[in-house]
Length: 268
Image (cartoon, rainbow, N blue to C red; front, side, top):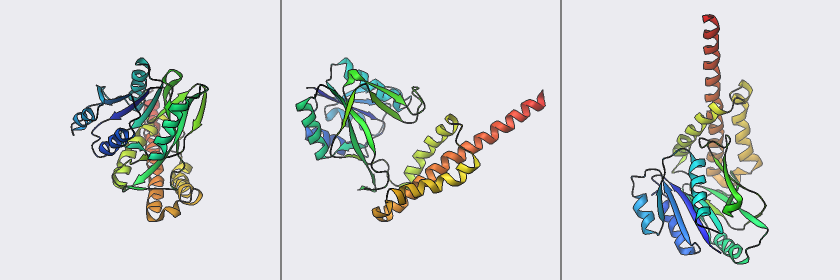
């Protein structure tokens, strides 16, 4: 069985060394693909030294990048494809599960979900945003990529989907998403701007007032984020802020659209 690994990068040297070290130590892959959208921090040279086949593709969203990677794996005859972000790496238990799946190669299974564990300040969170299941190991010929806003490449998040049976693998996919909370809020502000323009259900007064509180309670109480200590409290507050950003920007868009419509009506 051949395993291809695909990674999307852009100035990823903060996390790429640990990702590549994990891949090289596991030594399960037949080919490593990295599609880069213009790194200037040494990412390209470093990935090449680790044995990656480098491809350049201008950024049009994660959906387009991931779809392009999956097409490379499919076109080169990969039996399985493991799709990773540049800030994600499997732990030893997950690599062991991948190796077992490759060996057994069950004919009725076309995909495997993994448990992605969020990290903050280099420390894993065991409750906030957990469990988070992602379909990342797939048979390319049975797989496709869609976006959170439909099939367009501009979708904020990508979603790998398959036609057929999927299983869940033990182990964890470690996810070192951002440097600190300021970095996390900054990144999510960009996502919020896109969502504000794509989902008209956002931005209502009720949602603007209550959704942040609901987001905090979901993470801190229902998911028991309090068991993650102070980081759990701060990350739960961050999730509330991310939700607030989304609805605040949507409310602003609603206001401006309403005023523009009123101006057009007066003009007639």
